[in-house]
Length: 446
Image (cartoon, rainbow, N blue to C red):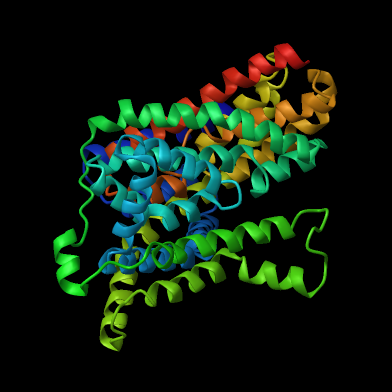
């Protein structure tokens, strides 16, 4: 199988997937599973291997974020029904003002995305996103796009998320310098995401669709939950996950004993979100077991479509991951003399092909590491800038084979065509903005 044939099949499969989902209005789950199988067969994979890979990819995604999504939807359901989400939105708007709600969500995403995976962060924060949209009279598309961009920028560029850490390790880059540089370079990316949300996503009207009005909630409960109580199911999991990230640093700031193991356990996103579920359940004014069970059941039911669509994207990505994409790129791009563009382009192509940002980062860094000297980036700052270029490439762009695309679209009531405009367009532009900043930095610092 030639490289040209393989890339043609991948390109046509993505086009076919977009057409079937957006134009023919077919369900994404069916489309992605069928296309994943067809791509594997057309590219010469053994039929049994194709089926095994599709199942494995489906199961791996559910194993990685399935419980997180389930817990997140349960928390969101309870926050919505008890009025806690409304309390949080009113608290935020009281501090920053309605006119700055989009900026606020971008900044919240920027901070949260440093210790928390973007998928988990978006699930955790989506109740605030929806309530904030309702209270500030903004389209949910605008608020969700700003939040998504903020989370994605630091997820791809700033340790301790696994991708940037893996790049730094493979390239031998100084981790502290990577963190500081990533924090700076991700700022223009987030700023552009906020600009994109205000200018582009604002053309899409998605109502926030809150479960109840303020009057209905007050009539039902007499008063809304307090701010601290309302924020706790979201803030505590974020703090626990952040502490785990700190404890997992190579310098072992929490030691290597019982404290570190305990923090690592409760800071696992699964455990942290389960704790969040129990905190959310304390918001229910009258502990009626039937009510508790009904709301948890509704949260589980609400997560079903998100889970199967996200997992189907994992199947498609797993099939593409079996193809020799990296080997084909190594011979065709590394000798073009494009400087800092080389790691960016390789990472971008892998991201677009396979969907997973972390995988794109790891594979690209492994390919580029032996060639740092040849490319002229073997200095301390050169390694850091290559790390940034790979992270920026992995940001470009989130589409249907990326689980994050479906998390954002499903938790924000976006149709696939709307998600392509908001999520794919924004992340593609963010990556290019980062590339420009990195290129300018390379001219000054190297």
